[in-house]
Image 1 (cartoon, protein in one colour):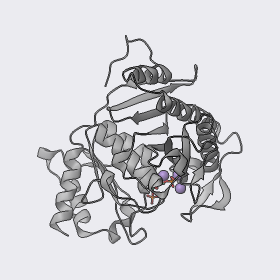
Image 2 (image 1 turned 90 degrees about the vertical axis):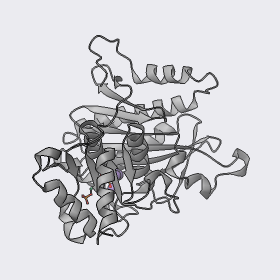
Image 3 (image 1 turned 135 degrees about the vertical axis):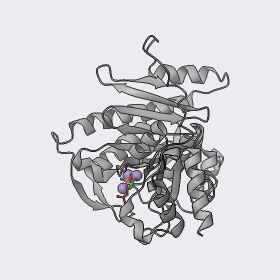
Image 4 (image 1 turned 120 degrees about the vertical axis):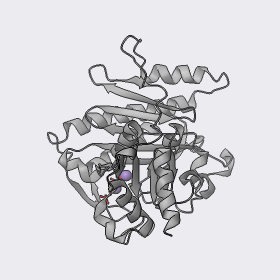
Length: 337
Ligand code: AHG
Ligand code: MN
Ligand code: MN
Ligand code: MN
C-alpha cells in the first residue's frame, strides 16, 4: 500500500495522462475511454448515495435476458455508462448485462469494444449494501470498413486491453489495470475527483477468508465440499479455521479478497449448471485485475482468461483470489473429481 500521507494528490485524470506519456506513440484514445468511465462512475455514485431519497430504489418492472428482475439503478447505470462512452468517437460496440444483444454506438469507427456489468450486486441495492460496476475493454479485430463481426465480441479474456471496477461502498473507489499492475483511486466527493490511493496493489499470496454462498452446499461437487470443510478445521499452524465472509456483490467480495487475501468462489450448482457469474463482464475483467495483482482465477481447472467464449452472456464457475488458496481448492477438486 503506497503511503500517500506526504505525497502530492494525484487525480485519475492526471494519472491517466502520466501513464499515457510513457507510451510516446499513444493516441490518447484509451485514456479518454477510461476518463469517460470515470465520469459515468461519479454520476452513478451520486445517484447511489441519494438512493432512498430519490425514486431510484426498487424494481423497474422488467426482466433481463437472464430472467432477473431489473432494478431501476441497473438501468440508470447502464444508460449513464453507454451515453458516457458514446461521447467520444472511441468505442464502436458495448455489450452489457442489461441488453440482450450488442449495442452498436453512433461511431462505428471506434476501435474499442466495452463489456459492462453496469450495476453488480443488484440484490443489495435496496438494503444499502455495497454494489459495483464492472468494465472490460478489447480492441476491435475487424477492419473499420469490414464492419463489426461476432469475432470482435467473442475474444478470450487474455485479449483485454484494460479492465476494472467501481465499488460504491463506504467510499466510492475505482480500480483498474491496463496490464501494467493495478491502480486504485478513491472518490473525494468534496472536489468530485478520483484520487490515487494505490498505484500497484498486490493481493496477499495466501489468505484466511473464504467467500462462497453456502446455501447451495448440497449441490456442490465433493471436492468443493471437502475444501470448505478443510477451511473449517481447527489448525493454528495454518491459521484455520478461516473466516467466512459473503456480501453477495461480486465486486465487493473480490475487492475485499484483493485487500485481505483469501478466495471468492461461485461454483456450478443445480440451480446454475454452468455457474451463475457471466464470463465476459464479471469473471474476465476481475480475473485480469486479480492476476495483475499477483493472484489467480480459474474455472475449477483452467485459467478463466483462456476460456474461448461462444456467447456474449455465457456463464462460468469461478475460483478467484490468492494463489495459494486457489491452488489448494484446485487440489481438492482434482483429488475428488
Ligand atoms: P448482478 O447484480 O450484476 O446480476 O450480479 C449479481 C451476482 C454477483 O454480484 C454476486 O456475486 C452473485 O450474483 C450473488 O449471487 P447469489 O445471490 O446467488 O449468491
Ligand atoms: Mn443482474
Ligand atoms: Mn454482476
Ligand atoms: Mn449487474
